[in-house]
Image 1 (cartoon, one colour):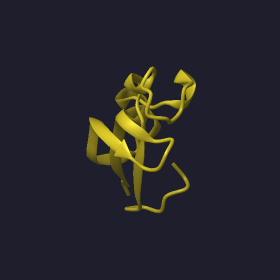
Image 2 (image 1 turned 120 degrees about the vertical axis):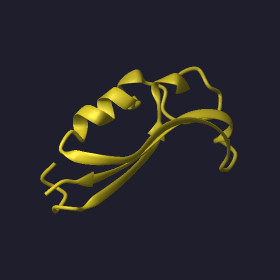
Image 3 (image 1 turned 30 degrees about the vertical axis):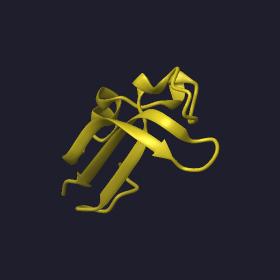
Image 4 (image 1 turned 60 degrees about the vertical axis):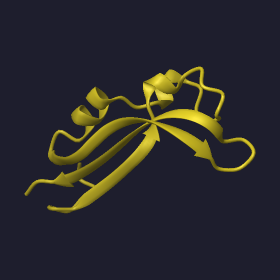
Length: 79
């Protein structure tokens, strides 16, 4: 996690693994989706300030409409 300075914060929002098969647009390959364990591992040197999976309704133009599964995280680098 060398890209963050000590106490630096990174905010992530992406489609989670449960999004496959949803017709609302977004990524369609499992290897391009996130899950909680992956983010915990990737940001193991950070404090987790928030981490949640969420079902949302997208209304973001013609190709992003309908139900979607996302994951959101806020991570703060430790000293």
